[in-house]
Length: 194
Ligand SMILES: Cc1cc2nc3c(=O)[nH]c(=O)nc-3n(C[C@H](O)[C@H](O)[C@H](O)COP(=O)(O)O)c2cc1C
Image (cartoon, rainbow, N blue to C red; front, side, top):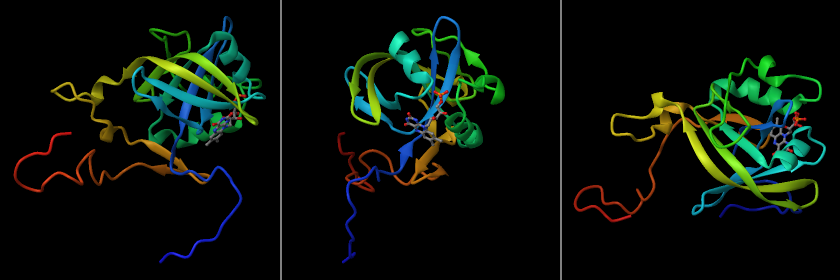
């Protein structure tokens, strides 16, 4: 049996996705890094991001009530980190990171061309939790790089070389070791319905 020690409550959840969130207001666009994010509802499709009030992006999100959540590839780890330590107050992070902004289809916040998947979102709820405000948002459009769509129209996300964040470190999400329901599928014989 694995012997356990006990710590007081802390944010020890891992691995996490790490995303580049874009915002826009009437005069500017910004991008910043968020690891406190997740899907919170399937129908309607919704996600959440948690943002500290002191972030330059925070009032922009409150005002526009729109964000685009861009999923970066592992090759952008350095840019992801840079967008998470520098502020839009002092830097144009799009220029600094050589990101190409593409206009949103359902929101004003831009899609980052270099990210394989981007989720355009409209904020529906803002919850003040403590250090962070929780923004809950409807996913109004999914923008996907055409090169990831196979001949049957399916998304081949495993070719996107995605990035994860665990305990202060960036990781490559490389090896697929199973698929949804594979544990109950018979190795041979009739298929189990999912
Ligand atoms: C890996 C990583 C994850 C981060 N996750 C969050 C987060 O979930 N919420 C948040 O408010 N800040 C987070 N940050 C910090 C912001 O991205 C950082 O303060 C950024 O400079 C804010 O940019 P802005 O001032 O241009 O809005 C994270 C930073 C890094 C490096």
